[in-house]
Image (tube, rainbow, N blue to C red):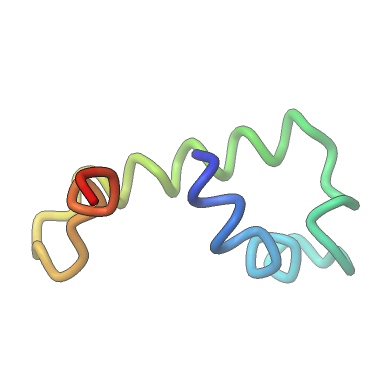
Length: 56
């Protein structure tokens, strides 16, 4: 989830109509980051294997 917020926080903010990731209340940010992190972990296409990110 930290990687998602770090790499995609600004995009999450834009989707939610916010100026910055800091403008998202913690509960909502955790909800969206958790969902996106699971998407990356379960990527069936294997185009972007998030697990390799942590093996480096």
